Length: 168
Image 1 (cartoon, rainbow, N blue to C red):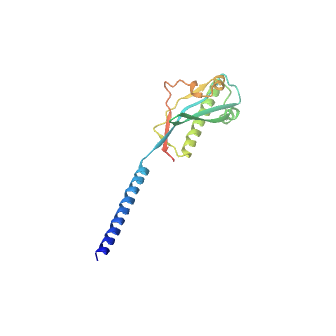
Image 2: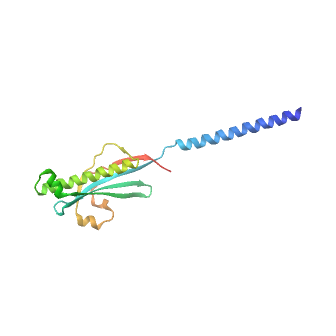
Image 3: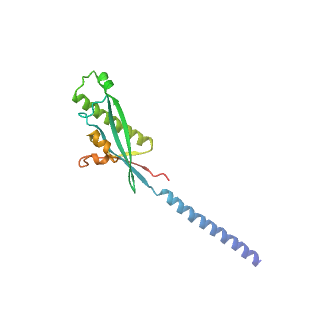
């Protein structure tokens, strides 16, 4: 009778040990899954070319997305080209410096909207109220630099920030 008790006790202890090991191991992996990690992006600028210099029929608006990474900013430029003749025709306006400036601002605004839509479709959520100043750049300086951030005075410009759960 004693050997049966020892075998039964050994089986019970091994089942308790397996159960304890599995429950501790599952708790550890569940805790790892609960830990929230975020990644961040920002629209750092929205701009168009200086309306006094650029007298083309196409007016280009750009917005710059910065994907924030530990190694720095990975930049993506979103472009929108506005047909200036169509812009004047739809609004029944005459060509002037002011209408070209307004069209440039409109192109910048649409490029900004495209950048927001792109980030939204990638699962990014906006953080806070958008407060971005639309700017003008000189086309010659634009073509000279690969990193467009050197073209802007960051003193009063506020970026629009986004976040999403980090995908692994």
